[in-house]
Image (cartoon, helix red, strand yellow):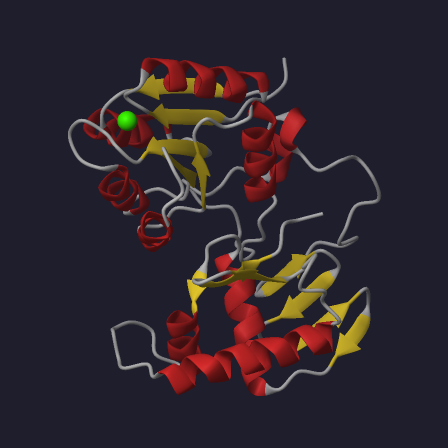
Length: 265
Ligand code: CA
């Protein structure tokens, strides 16, 4: 019997809940369906899932609040399910800690692909800790990357990120693509690190301005010129990485919002 991951579905619509459950089960997850925000948060607390889907419109509190509560104690991959695409809701979801969102009606194949991409999202390497994300070996077989040459070939040391052929060492401040060193300015390196750390989480231009300023939190003033400077730095970073903006391996633009990491390949 293959090792299965756990998923929690928080969805008050019976049909959508059933189809989410079906798709996740087919992907190898043991699924705990719930229909209110309170039940959902409690189920996540009890079952420590790898993946959680949260409906935006729930009967007790909304999906954004549910995500915020879940994110307070859980490192699960979180997908917000919304009836129609709304940029403001999407941004709020990301701010609440969601990793991705999906609009209904969704195609099962799309949900499977989204989950697979999220599970490959790079995370800072840490020794396993209680409550930490399950190692790749424990992920459902259907969702692990295609069997091919392992990459990177050797385990990454702490503080390193690896994604689509790029390896970044935070401590040494070095970046390599397929083994070849890439020269980056301080700002380009900081932006690349922010994108790698954020994964599929969209970071607004203002977030990135504050990051480059080395501000950890707060809503300090960000001017239009500051945001424009980020766009210029991102353009130069892309050039240094030889990253194609139409098919980004690393720096993906989310129109009208900001940037995030390209999908794993
Ligand atoms: Ca609903």
